[in-house]
Amino acid sequence: MATLRVALVQLYGRPTKKECIANAIAQIRLAKDRGAQLIILPECFNSPYSTAEFGRHAEEIPRGETSLALARVAAELGIYLVGGTYPEREGTKLYNTCPVFGPKGELLCKYRKMHLFDMDIPGRCTFQESAALAAGDRFATFSIGTLKIGLGICWDKRFPELTACYRALGCDMMIFPSAFDPYTGPLHWDLLGRARALDNQMFVALVSPARDPTTDYVAYGYSLMCDPWGRVLCRAKEDQELLVTDIDLKLCNEIKQQIPILRQKRTDVYELKAKK
Image (tube, rainbow, N blue to C red):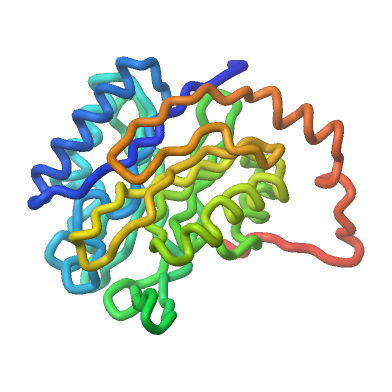
C-alpha cells in the first residue's frame, strides 16, 4: 500500500442526536463515493460540547445507538471509520471516547481522552471537562495494512510526550478529533498539528466540528492534515466541509532515512516510554 485516501469530515451539530448521526452518515457516504478508505469524524459530533449535556447524550460503546449506526455503515461501505468522539457511559463514569470501526463493522479499538480540557482564559474561553468526565489511561492503536495509527483527542495534542510514546509504539500517523476554541485556534491549531508531525516524523490529522456561533461552546473549525515534513496537505474553512486527501506512505521511511533523529535519540541520557 503506497498511498491511503483519507477523509476528514467537519460537521455541523444538529438539534438531536438522531439528526447528528444521520448528518454524519450522509457525509461518510459522500467520502466513500470519493474513494476514501479511512474516514474521520470530529470531536463530540453527536452531542453539544457542554458538561451539562454529556450525561444526557452518553451511551455505552459499542452497544449504544451511535456506535451501532457507525458499525453498520462501516461494514456496508467496507471502510475504516474513526468515529470522532462522543460521550461514553461505563457504570457511574463518563468519558470522552473515540471508537474505531473496521471494514466488517467490528470495533477495532477505543480511546478515552487522557488529558481533560480544563482551561480558564478570562473573557475568552473557560471550560472544565473534569467537572463531568473521567480521564482515560490507555493508549489505543489500529493498523491499515502496514500503517499503524495512534489516537488522541484535542487537548491531548498539547502534550508532546503522548505523541512521542505513540511514535515509540511504531505509529506513523496520529488522529486527533478536536474541538478547539476560536481564541486559541488561530494561535496554536496549525502550530500544534505541524509540530507533532515534524517532531515525530508522522502524519497528523486534526478533525474539528464546523463553527457555529449560536452554540454555547464555539468550535474553531479548520480541520487539517499534516505530513511528516510538517507541511499542511489540506485545510478546511469554518463551515461543514468534507476534505479528501491521498497520503504518501513512503514519506515516513524516506524522512526517517534522510533525517534520522529517531535513531539519534540519546537513550543513554533520557528516555520516554508508555507505562500502560
